[in-house]
Amino acid sequence: MTSNTGRNWFDQGGQAYARFRPEYPAELAAYLASCAPDRRLAVDVGCGNGQLTAQLAGHFQQVVGFDPSADQIAHAVPRANIDYCCAAAERLPLAERSASLLSAAQAAHWFDLPAFYTEVRRVARPGAVLALISYGVLQLERDLDARFQRFYHEEIGRYWPAERQLVDSGYATLDFPFEAIEPPAMAIRLDWDLPQLLGYIATWSAVRQAREAGQAAILQRFAGELAELWGDPAAQRAISWPINMRIGRT
Picture 1 (cartoon, rainbow, N blue to C red):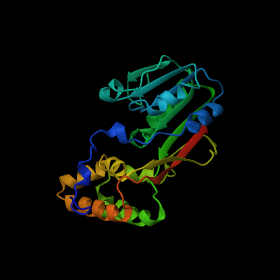
Picture 2 (picture 1 turned 120 degrees about the vertical axis):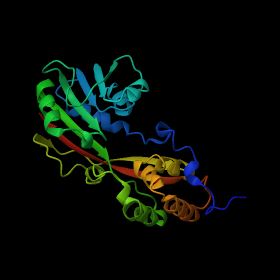
Picture 3 (picture 1 turned 45 degrees about the vertical axis):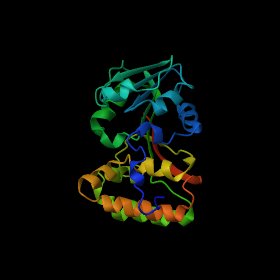
Picture 4 (picture 1 turned 60 degrees about the horizontal axis):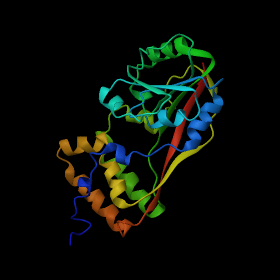
C-alpha cells in the first residue's frame, strides 16, 4: 500500500482543467443582472469555456462570450441564447451602445485595460454595467489552512506570473475609472475530497512552472504533508474562495 508521503498526488488528473474548475454561485449572475439597466444583452469578455457566460444566459435575452483562444471557444458550454466568438477584449465585434452588461471573470488582469475600457465605453448602453470578477486564494478548514497558505505564498509563490498579484489583491490596484457600485460579499463554497483538491492545484501555472524548474520535490512534500493532516483521502472537506469584484456604471 502506498503511503501518503510517497504517493504521487499530482498525477491525479490535473490535466483535465474543466473537471476541477470551481463553479461560480448562481447568486453572482443574478446579482449582475440586477445591476444592469435592462436584460437585453450581456457580454462576457475572456469567457474561456463559458462558465459564467452560461449562468448569465438564464437572466438575459441574449449573451455573447468572447475569448481570444479558439480552443476555449470550441469547448464552450452551448445554449440557445448564447453566441461565442473568438475575439480579443480590446477589439470587440459589437455594435455601439448595444451591451447592457459587460463582465470579465478571472480575465481582466490579462487585458490592455485602457484599450478595453475604450471598447467598453463604445459598446455600452446608457447605464450599462461593467463587472471585473476574480476569485481569491482558496481557504481550507483551520487544521489544513496554515499548511496550504505556506505552500501558496512561500513555496511556489515565485512561480506565479506577475499578473497573479492582481488577482490576489482582488483587482484593488487596477485603474477603474467608472462610477463604483459596492457589491455584496460572495464566495464559492465546495466540499472536496483530497484528490479533487490536489487535482485542482495541479492545474495551476505555478505548479507547472515549479515542475519545469526541477522543483517537483516541493510539490510532493506539500501533498504528502497535507495528506497526513487530511486523514482519509475520500473524506470531504469544506473549501471556499472569496469572490472579488470591481463593478461600475459606464
